[in-house]
Image 1: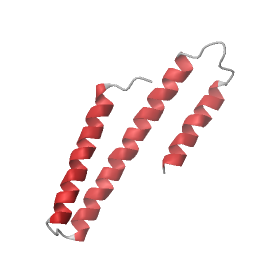
Image 2: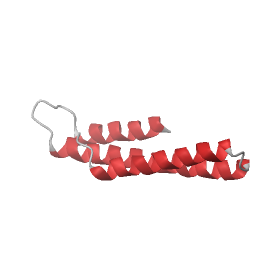
Image 3: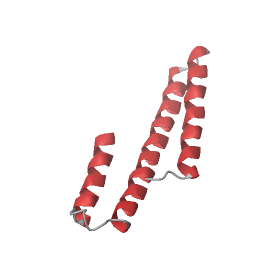
Image 4: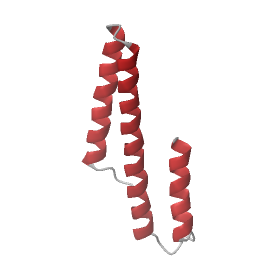
Length: 87
């Protein structure tokens, strides 16, 4: 699978969020604020996982060759399992 620049940009934003959280911790900011930012980072990671899994699923279905014996249902189930596993 090829990852496009949008995925990389998402990850760079998440990286910035994490660095901000570390700074907040170093500055002894209120735990509610730290948790809020951690939650936002986790949501961003979850959304990025969804983008990667869905993009990969589309590619798998569109570019399936004759040697791949999996049905579309099996490919979708595999994608769903990846999403569930990520939680």
